[in-house]
Each structure stands twice: as structure tokens, then as C-alpha cells.
Length: 327
Length: 299
Image (tube, rainbow over all chains, first blue to last red; front, side, top):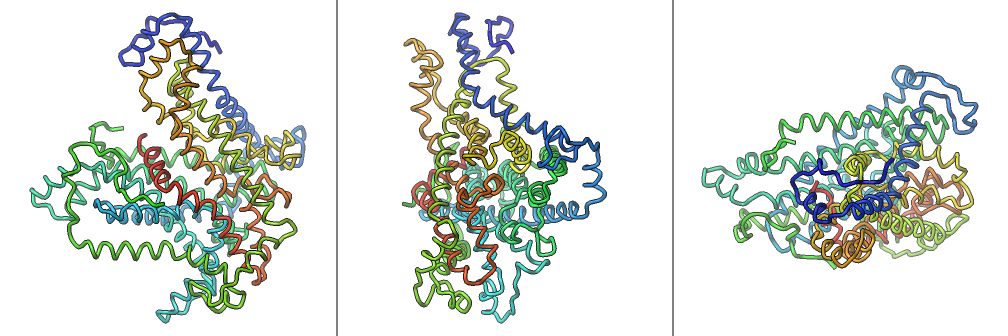
């Protein structure tokens, strides 16, 4: 790759950057800047190649082999599409994990965002205690992803846990929710929803950007609270909703820690918490089927890319940008 | 310290005099908020309460607070395994602090190049960097494990290398992006003035960008510490010897021992493991909340 950047008179465009460059003048300086650019970029470039791109390509290759981490590369056998075939046609636990992950994301993400938006609306009115509440609501987002909190959660929804004692106040007989295949995943969803603080903070920032004149105009036109919410708040907030939706969905697909702690790394009870990433971990690091796990990782990456693309292509039908640009 | 001032961003448009008075029933609103706070904080208070309950009370008293204060769980938990929790905490602190250093240094260098320097293919590399933002770490872990194992670094003399090498190579694109966004707010006139004084790209970095990027560096440091401290997946995959374990990996050992007697110590160590994050929260609450604002929205 050539690092020399000779001045190029044909690439003169508008914009301040270009103007700066021209004022700077002689080619020698520009040359040194081009070199400096790559000097400063070099750690990132080495990282991109060394620990991201090349390993990813290697794992793409290994996904067509029977690699199991113990055999040396020279003895690895090419198996063609066998791993992918097995994944899609002959591995019920793979599809089970896909179902568990989708169920988790489809239920937990909308509820989490609804909670975040609801609380943000409550907090939005300028008023003195808002900083304190905002901080307290945000705290679970900092702690919730840890092993420690997952341990607490599992015990809270256990037979002798705090949740059942709460139910018994209302005369309801509880059960060990985390050991019940019908309820274990739900307790993890509650843990995810409990961490509504991070999207809430983003919603709050978005709400602050909604011009108050719009509400005034709407109320002059006779719009009540609900109409104002539907016709002013929601459209003005749609870019932020979109941002949170994409981010939380991608995060939701990757839930690992809590499922690992709840099931002690097995995905139990009866595979009810076998999230995609947990299944991937078991395949690659417990069963040591690295070739197969590589295939799973690649399909996961493609699935996330496709889902993100779907979000962006449907976004233009409901996301409203107030600068009039459709992105 | 908890900040009470409500304004987060710079309000666009007319002055906030137009801000509406709390309409409706402020008391009702406050009651609802307090109820939500109670639900949100309940698990945390219950955790702390349980950590000081005796074994007998853990089974019979599921209330928030113990009838008899039993700090013994902490000493029991501390030395519950063959290796003491002190070692696990040291390991975690070392990994987290070195990650902070690595992320701060390498992301700052990359961000300066993207934000300020003109070089060939900059646009393309920037797009690639944004693309890696979307790469899930669970996808990267399999190839990285294969790589580091092939290099003999997994379970090597110093088993933390696979955890730390990527952090010194600016692979956390989130922080690169955060710093690029920050540097774009530093006036270019400062660069210009330094250039007139004869400074080149390195001088501008050293004398203008580095000192002015301190807020972005602090945000990066706090978030990379907390995320690394809480991270489980990578540490679980790369650490295999008990004495190398970090706190999250060590905590899962409690789950293996199915005996009820470990619950108190397990809760005690869970509380201790969250303490650093909690202290960070108390000290930097405002910065954390605003950090995710600025990095999250200005896209």
C-alpha cells in the first residue's frame, strides 16, 4: 500500500476540511500527515488484521472442517457443508436454541423498551429529583450483566426466594421458578427488563430534544395528552426508539451470563434456557467441536446482519427524522 | 455524591423558559416513581441483607434484613476455596486496570487518526471500524480462541495475554468511535495555531488533542473498567487454572457446590464483587449517565 499522498488538484471539493488542507500548502507536509495517519492507526490496523479479520477468515475455513481443537491443523479434514447441514437438518438442540433466543428477544426487548419509555416520560418533566431517580434507575444496567447479580436473581426466584415470599403475602403458593422449564426463561426476561435504565437514559435525552412549541401548537389545536403523545412525542422520538430497538435486540440475542449461571452452564432445566451463545459455548468449549462451533458463529453473525438490515429497511416507514432526511 | 441538576444536553431551540410546569398530579407521579425505585432496588437490598444472614435465617427468613447480623459469611466466603478470594480480586483488578490502559492508549491513537489526519483510504477504514462495532464478541471468541491457542498463549505462562492483547490493539471500536466523536468537537483553530507554531501531526497530538481529550479518556476508562470487571464470557473461556481465576469465574464455583451451606458466603462474595462497580457509580454517576447519552445518540 502506497503511503505517499501527493497533492491532488482534481480532488478539490467544498467543505472546510478541504480548505484547511489547501491552506496548509506544500506536499511535504501532507505527505508527513499521510504517514502519520498510518502511524497512529497502526495499533488498530494490526488489531483489525491480527485478532479480527484473519481469525474470522480462519474460522470460516474451519467451519467446513471437523476441527476439534485437539488435532493439529495438518490433520484437519475438509467436510464440505456437513456442519451447516447438521445444523439445519440434524441437530434439534440447535433449533431449540434458536427458538429460545428468539422467544427471549421477542418478549424481553419490547417490554424493556416499554418500561424505559414509560419511566422516561414520568421523569421528563423538569423537576428537582430527576437526577437522583435517573441515577437509581440506571444502576441495574451497570450491575445486571454480572455473574453476582445473576446469582442473586436465581436465588430470588428459587423455592425459598424473595419472590415466593412476596407471593405468599397475597396467599399465592409459589414454586421454584428457576427449576421449572416453563418459567426459567421468564425469570431471565425479568432480569433483562430490570435493566431498563440504559435505554431510559437515551430516551430521556431524546425527549429533551423535542421542541416544546410542538406541544403548545398541539394543545392549541385541542389535542389532549394522549393525542400529543401519539402525534408529537412518538414521531419525534422515533429515531431514538429505532436506535434503542436495534441496540437492545442485538444485545438480547447475546444473553449468556445469566443463562449460564441459572443452568450451571447446561442450558437447563430441560434446555429451557439454552440461549444461542450458550449452545455455541457448549459446542465449542465443552464438546470441543470447534469446526461446528465456527459454523454456528458465522450463522449467528449473518443472522444479526440480516436482522439489522431488516430493521434499517423497515425503519424508513416509521422513523421520522426532523431534518427531513430519510436515512 | 448524586447530581441533582436535571439538564443533560444542550437544549436546542428557544430557551427552556417554555418548559411546562408539572401538569397533572405531581404527588401521584412521585408516588409511582418511588414505587418503581422500590422494585428496582429490592433485589440489591435483599442481596446485601442475605449476605449477613445466618444459614438458618437464609432458609426461614426471606425478608430484607436479618434478625441477627452475621458478618461471618464474608470471612467464610473469602476462604471458601483452595485459593482465597483476595487472589481472585487481585486478578480481576489487574485485568481490568490493564484493559483500561490498553483501551485508553490504543483507541486514542486510532481516534486521532480518524478525526484529524488525512491519509489514503481513511474513509474506508472508518467504515470498517464502524462495521466492527456490530461484531458480537460471542462470534469473535471462537476464532480468537483458536488463534491464541495455536500461538500457545491459552493457559500459557501468563494466561491473561489473550484477554489483554486485543485491548491494546484498539479492538473496542465503541471507544474509538466515542473518542472520534469527542475530538470532532475540539476546535480545529487550535490545530491551526499549533501548526503555525511549527507543530506537526505528532506535536498537535501531544500538545492539543491529548490534553483536551481528557474527558473522553475518563469516560473510556470508567466504562472499560466496569465492563471488564463484570465480563464473564471471555474470562471463562480463557482462564482454566484456579489460581488464575478472576472474580466472576470464581463466583460460578459456588454454583457447582450444591450444598445449601454455601449460599451465605456466595452472597457475601457477590456483594463484594459488585462493590467496585457500585463505588464507581456513586463517584461518577453523572458522567456515566451522560457518557451513554453522548456516545449513544450523536451518531
